[in-house]
Amino acid sequence: MHKPEEFIPLIKHEVAHVFMDIISENKALPMWLKEGLAESLSVTCKVKNYEGLYLEDDFYKKLAMPWDWENRIKRGGYKISYLFVTYLIEKFGAKKIINLMKVCDKNYTERIFAKCFEKIYTVSLEKIADDFLKEI
Image 1: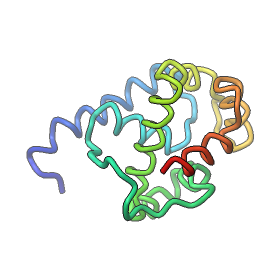
Image 2: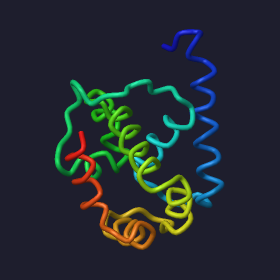
Image 3: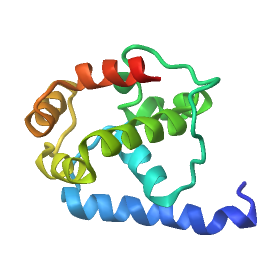
Image 4: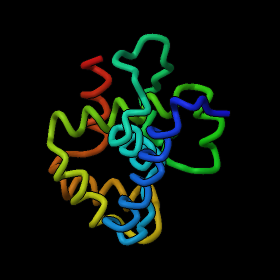
C-alpha cells in the first residue's frame, strides 16, 4: 500500500515504463535496467548510498529476470538497480542507455544482452559492473 505522497512519483515511475517500451519498441530488457531507469526518472528511490544493500559480484545477472524479482525486491532490488543505472548515466551519459534499449533483442538472453551492451558501451557489462562495485 502506498502513501498519498508517493502517488505522483509512482505515476512517473509507471509512465517511465511506457516510454521505455516505446523507445525499445517493446524489446526485452533486464529488470535491473527497466526498474533502475524508471526509479531514476521518477525519483521514487531516494537512496544515495549502498549501506545495508546486499551486492553480489554478479548482481546484474540476478536482477535480470522477472520471475525472481519479488525475492530481489526484498534484498534491495529497486535500490541496487537505481544505483547501477544512475552510475551508468553519470559515467557514460543517458544517450548510451537509450541506444542500448534500441539495439536490444526482442527476446532477452544474458548472452545476447551482453553483446548488445558491449556494442554500445565498448566494454563488457561484467567489467562495468565490477568497476561499479569497486567504486562503492
